[in-house]
Amino acid sequence: MADRVLNCASRVDIDSVWISGQAKKSNGKMIGIDGGDQRAQVALAHARFGPLGDTITFT
Image 1 (cartoon, helix red, strand yellow):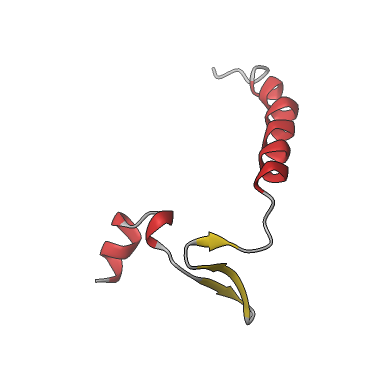
Image 2 (spheres, rainbow, N blue to C red):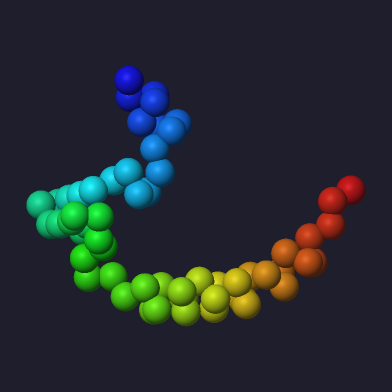
């Protein structure tokens, strides 16, 4: 049964998440997360590391 959860579930299937006794997701909604800030951080990481990937050569 656990393998089905691991292999078939997606984030929309997770209703609640608790970490160290604190709710991080409840009723399907993230708690204390600024989605805009998260997207901005991902964009900065892409801008920083994306060009580095172009320097990798495989022989």
